[in-house]
Image 1 (tube, rainbow, N blue to C red):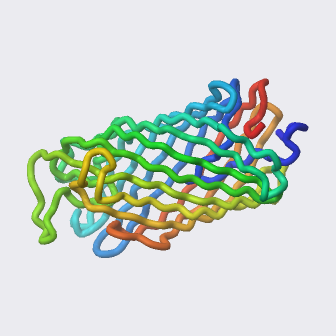
Image 2: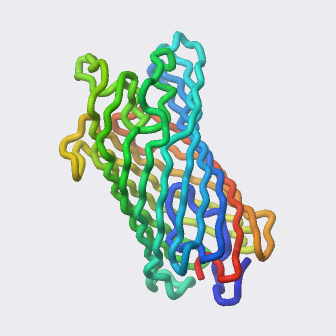
Image 3: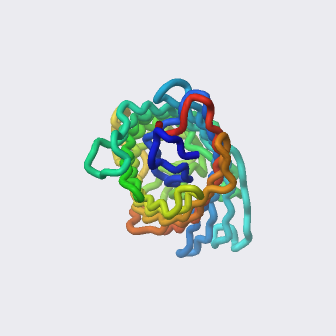
Length: 316
C-alpha cells in the first residue's frame, strides 16, 4: 500500500471529525461506516443520540473527489420527561453531498516547514430527515433532521512530518429558513421546543425558523507508529458554534450555542493488499467547553474499506 513515489504516506484510518486534504485518485474509492453516540446525563435527562453514517468517496478526476454521506439516527431517552420509561426512535437523517478539490499538494512529507496540502470543500445538505409532524409522546426523539437546505464552504489543511501528520479544518455553513411545528428542536441538540420565551412559554402551531450561521473548526495530530499496519493514535480538538445571526437571512429565531471537545482515538489497518484494505478506529470525545447545550460524552468508531485503482494512491 506504500508506492515508491510516496516515500512516507501509509494508509491509515485518519481523524474522525477533521477532513483530509488529500483526495481520492480517479478510479479509486472508499466506503465508510462511522458511528457516534452523544450521551447526555444530568438534570433529569438520560439520553442517547446515536448516529450511524454510511459514506462513499469517489475520485472523479485528478485532485477532485465527490463524497455522499447518508446518516441514520437512533435516539433513546429515560428521564423525567418520559416518566423514566425508556423510549426509542430511529430514522434517516439529513443527507450531505460535498466535493473536495486539492489545489495544492505538500512537496515534502518529512519536513514540517515545507508547504502543506490545501483543499476547498463546497458542501450541500439535503433535508431527508424527519422534522415535522413529530409525535408528542416521542418527546422529540423522532426528529432526525433540521428541515433546512444548507450550503457550506470548508478549507482543509494537511501537513506530514514523519512520524506525525497534522490536520486542520474550518468551515462556515449557511442554514436556510424552514417552517416547523411543535416539538421541533434546533439542530437536534437543545431538545427544547423552539421558539420559547425566557419564562418557558413556547409558541404552538407552525412557525418560521431561522438558524444562525454554523461555524465548524477542528485540529488533529496523528502519530503513525507502524506504517505497514496503519497503527497509530490521533488527538483531535473539535468545536462548533452556531451564531445568533445568519449571514444571508438575518437574525436567528433559535438560541445560539457552542462547544469544544477533545477527542483521542486509536487506529489500525487490517487486512490489506495492494488493491484493497480495511482501516479501523475507536475513540471518545470529551467536553472541554459547552454553552447552551446539555453536557455530552461521545464515543465513536469507524470502519473503512479502501479500493486503490490503477491511477494512483490517495496522497499521490
